[in-house]
Image (cartoon, rainbow, N blue to C red):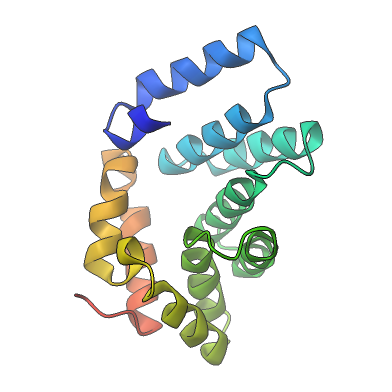
Length: 167
């Protein structure tokens, strides 16, 4: 996973697949592959990886990441209601995992739940990596395939509408 953050997504994915060849029941690897799939625009694949992770380990402490991956995929596939549900599930699992508030705020805004979107934007403002559109861009841009960077820009546009400041 750390390799993907440094822009080495292909090597990271191969390391995760190698891990699964050694132990196909290691649920966190499926969750991390789901995140990678989302960042490459393969949202159906991301959903399938998340389902596999949940099937293997429904009470895994890292499942907040899987909820975020599902929420992100739902947003990208035009299902803000599904994204909202998954974001809220993630918040219930780990209310300190800021990325679920990204998806939650965007989903709420797209659904017209303005007060809820504003509340979650306020939560984001408390996290240095997500306190502004620029901070989110810096934090996440390297995790996206260049051909799919439009997904990040679409998310940022939604969060701008929901009131997250530029700086």
